[in-house]
Each structure stands twice: as structure tokens, then as C-alpha cells.
Image (cartoon, rainbow, N blue to C red; front, side, top):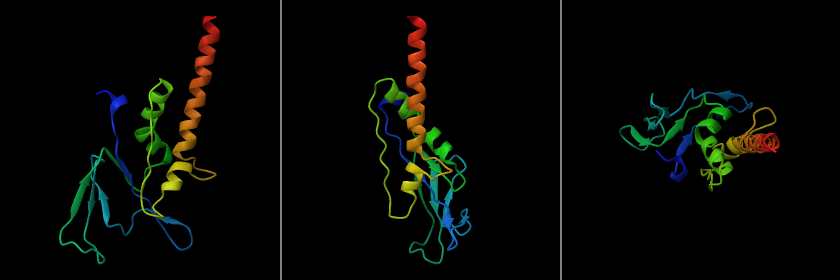
Length: 137
């Protein structure tokens, strides 16, 4: 499969944040991720308006326990590598207010987001190519 010519659609479930700012990892979630990590199932809860569970499939679904590094590695790293090799690449982050887009992209002081991780990989690749170029001269 040629990954340079592909759209990759993924979903990340954000942990619940309590009033005190601590997270509870999906304790009362109406969403469940399949074992293969490709389907999200919405299950009926007291606020649901549907009668039976609904499921939606994607290239990858990240559950509440996924780290920033895992999201980057499985969703963006290949795009960054292709950009380094001269291909165009784009990440579009879409979702409702408060769903974790900014955190996923930019992270926090302690947990870097995928933008930081991508830029880091780009600089590592540039330095590697510089040193390879110097060795050949």
C-alpha cells in the first residue's frame, strides 16, 4: 500500500475531566473502542436518543488510555516522514469545542503534542541528512 497517497481518518476519545481538574479514564463513557482499534461503538446511556448501539469505523480509534506519542506515531509520523522525503502532508483536526483538539496538537508543559513531536522529527532528519552530507564530502 502506497502511504504517500492516502487519507487517514482517526478519532481520539478524550478522558473525562473532573471539576477538580483530574481525569477519569472513561469511567462513565457512552463510547467503547473495538479490540482492533478501528471501530467506536456508542452505547445507550441515560442521555441517549437512540434505541440500540451504533458503531462507526475509522482507520484508527484511540481510546482514553492512548498517549500523545502513540497518537503521533500511529497517525502523523508517516506523514512527517513523507514530508521529509518531499511529499505534501496535511493534518486536519476537527471536532466540537472542548474535545481535546488543542491538547492533542500542542499538548502541555509535560506532555508534548503531535505538532511538537513532528517538528522534533523534522529537525532530527535535517541534522541526520547534514551529517550524512558531511561524511560524503
